[in-house]
Length: 116
Image (cartoon, rainbow, N blue to C red; front, side, top):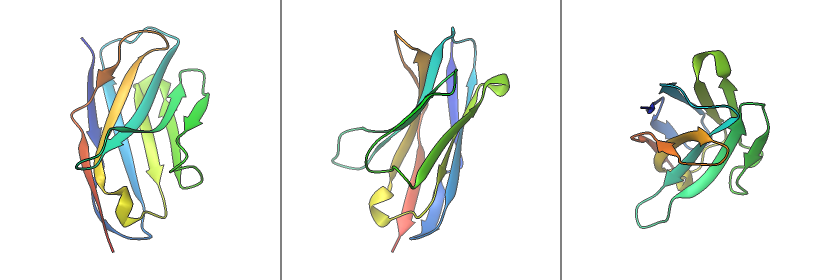
């Protein structure tokens, strides 16, 4: 059984930065992908970024140039560095992971609040 635990959320002023972490326990077959999504109240869950075990990355249009995804394969951990945060970035941020094709495991989410 795979469990994902996010950390690093919190309250930050507009223009500030936060770094989210997500640690996976259990084994995910390789090649695999780890990524980040977010959901604001009343909105659908939005894709932000993902990264494969080989290091290939993809970004959603809303965060390109501001957010950077990285991972530590040895620690089964994925990070999301978020810079130039805006109030509209306020949401619950979720980590997801899984094989390239197959089911996705989800974390419980961490709240990010950006004040204006």
